[in-house]
Length: 152
Image 1: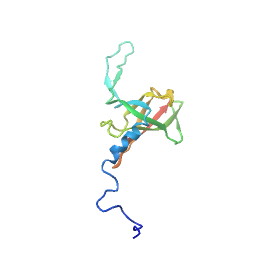
Image 2: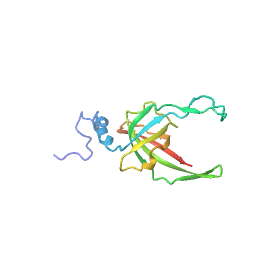
Image 3: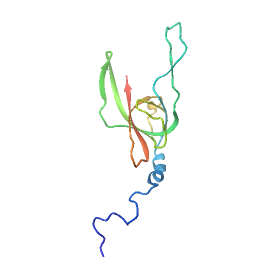
Image 4: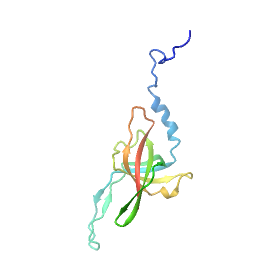
């Protein structure tokens, strides 16, 4: 007898296995060719400097240090603006980390690129990208962050 055209699988079996995400995570982990650290913006006031008349801010320490990551420039057009008589260009990036990493992750967090492998752009190292959006889903292999870099 021919199988029905609109079959939904065998009765009692799941379409997507319960361990689907966990079994696929090692595949994406192999594509992560850089490392980054993530911290909240801002910091704590340091000691007042009487010579400069300022109180420097000590950045918060990373809440997610030394994460494996994959960073790709998004194919969106750069946005350009004028700020204080200077042209500022904003570039968007897709920053991908392990789905279980960075439990404290929040919008406006800062992603500092620590290293890239030989396939990456070395000028990206040291850049701080701002988290504009983070993805969530019911089927997740990795966590995608949409970040921007203001190139002043």
